[in-house]
Amino acid sequence: MAARLLLAHPPRQPKKWTDTDIDPCMETAIADLFDRLYGLQSSTGDDGEVRPVVIGLSPAAKIAWVTFFNAHAQEQVGLSGDLSAMWSKLEGYAARFALVFHLARWAADDPSLETPDAIDRSSIEAGVRLARWFGQEIVRIYSILEESDEARARRRLIELIDRKGGSVTPRELMRSSRQWSTAEDAEAALVELVRTKLGQWVTRPRSGQGGRPTRAFVLFGSTGVDTTSAKPDENGRCVDAESSIAADGDLRK
Image 1 (tube, one colour):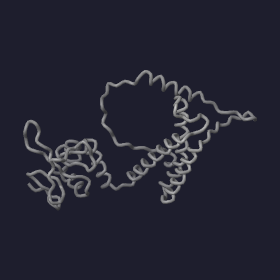
Image 2 (cartoon, helix red, strand yellow):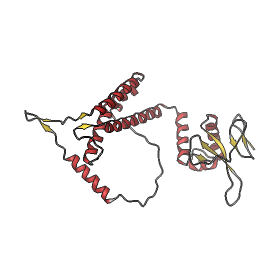
Image 3 (cartoon, one colour):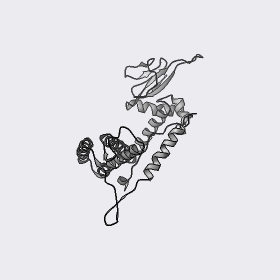
Image 4 (cartoon, one colour):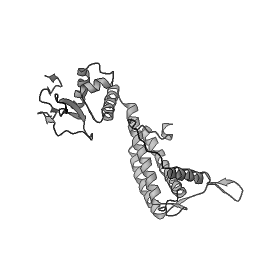
């Protein structure tokens, strides 16, 4: 049953205030677009029966579709079980998405649309990209559903740190969740992430009001975090001058 649904579980993002309003012209254009889409009519056969309107593919769109079809089929051969079932449905979704893009472009009077009577290459490529995005999402969601308690706890910890900008001190982590009752417990969790090579320790510089430098954990691949002042130890971990992490993960003052 799940293969018949388009599942998505994007990472949580913090709300951010904005004073920006939707342009009234844009609101009008969107309303007009939906009015044109709602006005589409089916065709009627010689027998009086209602029939769908068939929209074909341009020659370039046909080439793009065949390329995707063959590549997608090759991917499915290497899958089994739930993922294989999902991949079989994504093939049809890519075509449906392409039709949605084509009709939306027609309703919006997109000047780049080649012809209303045939789906062009741009719409096919857009439909394929969206279908592949949902494929990536379902792989991630299935892996979450199958993960162990330990893997789930590690993932949630990583997501929490990522939401905090990719960097956190043990004390900040402790204050973010009741899961860690002490800074030492929070630090032990971060030590485990370092051990599994998911991040490193860095030294945050002194604040403008003075004070001691603080040690923080930084996820690998995070952006917006300055690690130029970090001092790596012999194991490649970045620590400050007053404490270090031993190879066995113990904190030594």
